[in-house]
Image 1 (spheres, rainbow, N blue to C red):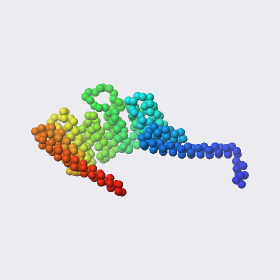
Image 2: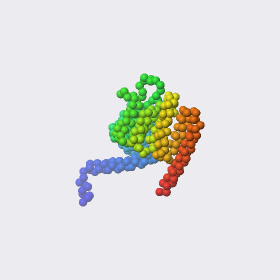
Image 3: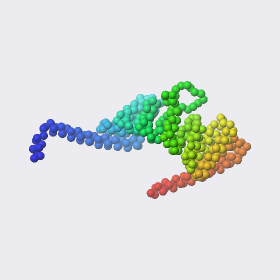
Image 4: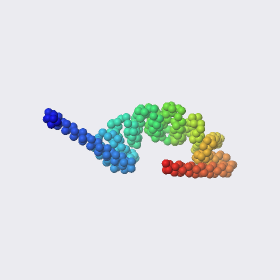
Length: 343
């Protein structure tokens, strides 16, 4: 009965069926090979063997040209071998071209993949192509406007283009300055937008404060205000008070030639009060004792030369307490690691 049924099928359909089956089988085997080489490439990539990874990713793409992740990591492999625009050699320039080619292909395959967008933006950033990099970083915000981490990523991108400030302005347009905004203003805007999204989160204020303190030269007073905001949100946390103490110490120390004796003393007193409060809240934190020591040694001993020996002696005492607290911290960490090993 089955033989008679087969005899009724037109020959052309039998030919098409054979071709279709062969095609499906070929695609299936191609997919398996692509996945095999992709897995091998990922292993070599994780071992930082980027040249070997490139060869394996390219083989995987021969078997499956639509494998977007392979293009992404192929681009990342070339990117890791790229030595920056300062190395103007044919080989290095080719690596940059290959990285862009692969990453743009991955972007074409999936233009909504945040990791691909970031990877491509990062490559343009390494090439110091601010305009193209900025478009991609801002697209990350468009795709996930409520993801807090994205604002830090974009702010970090802008932050790299903030110039070191010197006396006098050159009058030239800065890299990253578009639509009347500088890279500094754009970075600042990202931190402030992050705070607006969740004004009750202390993390946003901590990142903003760090941004101002990382500037060259630092804007200690703006950072100080954000540290104060954080103490209101975390009244039982010692770290914001520690940060205030560190902030006021560095302002008194780094700006000593610009501040009067009275101003330095005022900042030192605020620093001391904040550090003592941090110690009261968390006596085991060694860095707080360390800053108490350098506060006495570098500020009080300098502004009160007649009491220098006394302040140096107190600084030594705080230094010893810092060392003792640090030993306890390390011992606690050692015990924690041993307990983890027993589980």
